[in-house]
Length: 184
Image 1 (cartoon, rainbow, N blue to C red):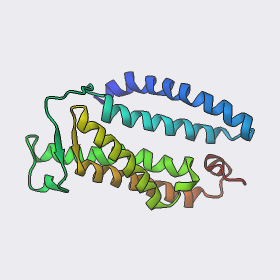
Image 2 (image 1 turned 90 degrees about the vertical axis):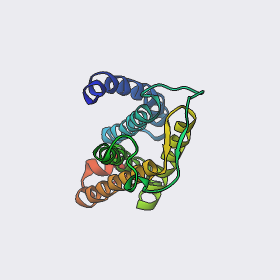
Image 3 (image 1 turned 45 degrees about the vertical axis):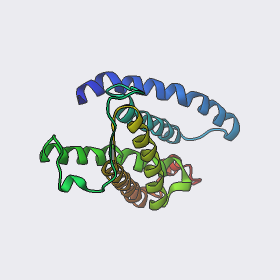
Image 4 (image 1 turned 135 degrees about the horizontal axis):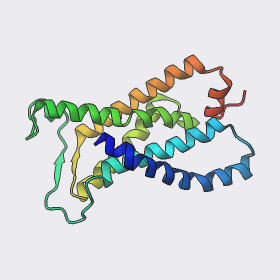
């Protein structure tokens, strides 16, 4: 699955991200003037992260608006007692992957948007984004699970922690300030 993503989906995501960012780049260049290449790269990566998450959570596996079933779990940490049909090891793997999937978003959000440079604001943005995805998943034949929301939000917080650490370590570097759009 990872090989398929790298060989097929990643290049498509990169091109679509570029096509989405190009008008924003042109608009921002005329409005704000020249910005650092690292700033443009961080915004471009943000678009790619959003598209990748949407692909994995919504589009991969197909969409149907008349699903044969609706699975909704509103009981937090139910996986501790029940492992469904997949078994304990698969459940742990799924929880881990749900957390890891949102680490890039938790990192790139505060880089791109100065208004979410506090951990709770980043966590809130990630949670609202994932709540929207989980709600959509319920209606397109996928499961909606509060545990996914919890683990995705946790992953976003881990991503923010990485941002926080890098910001402490690199805070005075010119290229880092350029990525954050902070004037030197």
